[in-house]
Image (tube, rainbow, N blue to C red; front, top):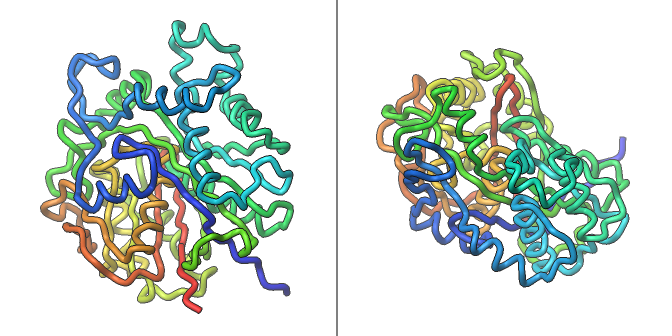
Length: 390
């Protein structure tokens, strides 16, 4: 049996309220600066809400510099700006080549087109996820049909697993995985109907947690199976990844954590990595009562309870289809700088199992980083990033 090709990280970018590059975002995270703000009398909600929104003026200002020949939506502008940055970082990646594929991860896509005043500028098909992906692909003159991954809140991390598997077929040499979702009244009201939105900035894994803070962001990771496409000495690979579905409930997470445990176990087995070799876990950490509890059960069952773990939801808010991508990028940057980011707003452990939540930003050698995510309908995913040390 032939050995699988490695999947290397060739470039990455985060656009969020904390910055428009990975470096800008990570500097703010090291200082434990949150992008979540208090909004009152806003378009997002008739009642006050904590959320993380990107400055529209800055989005439009940066996008106008591109002199695009057609009109693009807010989501599409974020995606194009993010992809532009990774291409600038690594000119070896030819996005117009048939060996390069674009994967778009999103849960709601151009959901703002439900507003008639916004939709009037676009063809009515633009609200479909595949049409948004086509518009992005068309801008970059990419010859392939883009792939859309939309599987609730695991979409971003799952897209990385899909990208890795597609590279292993050797049909492509580079895969650009981009995750994006935007804040709208529709999105906020949906979570409010679940009584799931926090009355404060989210407090992942904390005893006083009472729900999520929502956010918007875009993140891009370039995967390649050609090490000659790398332009940095430190090589990080997507070593393994797996997904599962426990089919517990249309919205409620499993009460046992078995589904997430299965995804973690399959990932570690594929990578041939022991639980004791994991240096850091980037958790899902929505700050809802049942999600955080479920995660603690799964992490403990996988014998990872002593591994330092954080959640970034209190910095970025829950960014839906972007979450798995931007949180993976922060994990990658943590590996590059050997720096663990503390969980903002965490004070006292509020789950039944003694998982090791990071409170303050600190230094630690990180060779293996595990990213986990869970979502509606009982979907779960785990991805393992590993430094190549030789």
